[in-house]
Length: 409
Image 1 (spheres, rainbow, N blue to C red):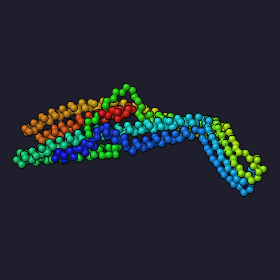
Image 2 (image 1 turned 90 degrees about the horizontal axis):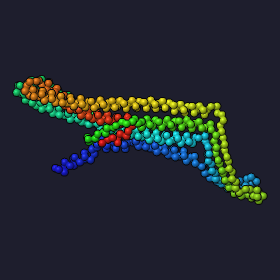
Image 3 (image 1 turned 120 degrees about the vertical axis):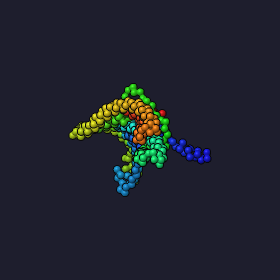
Image 4 (image 1 turned 45 degrees about the horizontal axis):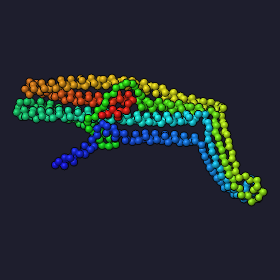
């Protein structure tokens, strides 16, 4: 029997998860994997761009055969070449391109950080809402137990003729309503478990006990998503400067070494042929006028930067306001706990008084049932208020730009 009991309990112990474990599991989901692949893609593209600015070495060879030999066209020939090309100056396009990619990588990293924090906040909300629902479920189950006990008692009184059938019907109605509410609570619990399964890609069994550390705000810091917008702005500004570089001079160096192996049938032609040739080129170009095409392209790119900058300032201000609101919400949540404690104390006192009077026949069934409901509602409200306070703490940490996972205990 002991082995059977362990066999039943052990799987639940193995797969039960606290808040930290749930968050760890949610960090392995496909959305985060997709974001990581995107970062690696940008890094590889940046590496490719960097390599493209390095000197280029090209080699080649060809063989030809002709049916009519001339001084410039031997009977057969083999030529080969080696070419080195390097762009010395491209109007600072290279520097702007590098800055654009560096900003893009930083933005992608911040977006990944923001995604992780968003998912963590979702998990925290689900976790504490689940705990709140469980407390409501337990309170409702206890209420139903009490109602069923009263129903059994009243049925005996009805059979003895000391109570009326309407009193029994009131109990039955209360039990049915409580059962409906219990089913609704159970549905909400299952919905949360399914939502957590979407995030973790695993079946979820939740254990209680996790809390959120309080935070002492010394100074405001930007959320990761706002910081990502800041890097996006820098990227657009760098892109605009890249466009403008088309009006600057272009300088490049080119050196080609050719080797010739000509096979002349006519010895007179053979003496005039050369074996090798090295050609060095210094290339300079400067587009002086293009009917303002480049200038308009720059203006367009710069307007995109200005548009994002305006949006950034708006979101930055909104984030600051959101943080202030979450702090106020947290203060109200603490007051709700104090109020709920006072409510529970009053409900317990009222229930004890009315229960005694009810058993002595001094109050009717309706008063007793109302006192009973108020007692269990007060228990549920207090527990829900405590769990809500944990969510409010998490919101403050999130809006203050901190890493939420570091504050879970």
